[in-house]
Length: 124
Image (cartoon, rainbow, N blue to C red):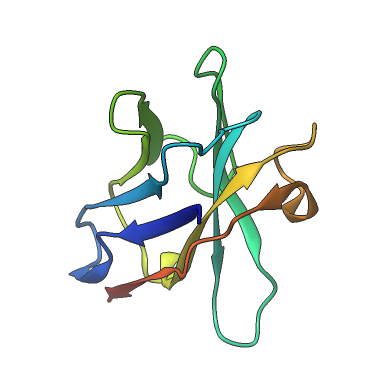
């Protein structure tokens, strides 16, 4: 069974940093077009955060995190990371990693194999 597992969340003060990991299990896991990070706060819609294309590691970021977050990949470990710096209280959410199979990286409908999510809480 293929699976994505997020980790690295926690409670940090505003201005702090966290690094999230999205690890894939299973030898047969195919990354297709790439992976992306989305986040969801209680009662809110899941929103796009960042995406990386597997073929060339090109990236895309939501305007709200551009310049603060960095998405990267480790091919050998089949793992994607999200380095989050200068965190703000509005970054508080459950962060999810998904595998992208469609063209629009910002569309949650083109992702599958979502992980269970990891909670990020930023205090003021």
